[in-house]
Length: 177
Image (cartoon, rainbow, N blue to C red; front, side, top):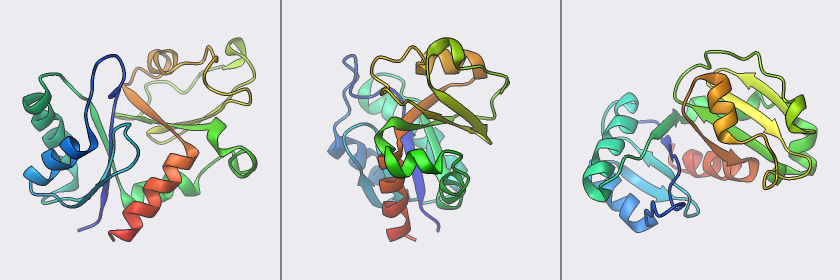
């Protein structure tokens, strides 16, 4: 089976703590193999025990039971992740300043891609498939272009990872292929 990358939304912020060991144990309890986490922000790479499409709902359900709160889980196969990396619209920025490049993964295709980031500052935004790429030249920390702003614009729930994390997850998934 091909590896799957699972991204948990909004964990280890605001009292929604999920330890990496706990996350691995939940995934392994579902029968997934070669389970690993990357940094303690809800990144999981695994080889699924069944259909890749069942990984997200299965993890989300098991995490509710384990933690007592809802944790949205967005998944991508290794092939999908490779395509995300390949279609990067900000290659120069990724080379020069990868920590300021952010990938937003949505739970489905954006309802709208008609979004103008100009009112939010110098940020650049590009939509492709179920993802949005954003470059924050001054960093994401003080930007007014936040995940809730993009969720409202797209009509989707999502989660964000910086480009360094995107590449690390790709490497971990390829090691399991």
